[in-house]
Length: 168
Image (cartoon, rainbow, N blue to C red):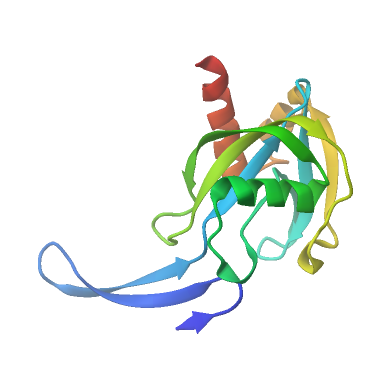
């Protein structure tokens, strides 16, 4: 039905459990990686304008490979971290898988914890030119979640995975 460099939209004919025909619209996007950069005290977030919402939002660095490529999740995570923040991680720990919107999209992601960080220059894509990045104490990130400053579903799910990882 529709295709661009970031996604395709398709409409599938389906047969329901009762045998009746139907249709299902699906947004296909490549798998993504999300990275939680953590220096032991602070978390690194990025903020950018999110066109569908019409507002700027704070979230963890995340993204897909260009032109709908399918990259290894760990490689993609390191790439997104470097591109959006300039950070390089000495250690990347997979935290878990996140399905973005399984009733609408085939997109899945892997969340990573990035530690042993070193700083460098970011390598943002043209679409990310308005992006800013900053370190926040964990208490501030949790306050931002409670007050609705951070509402990105993937970032919230990844933070939950981080909390579970820390309990294990």
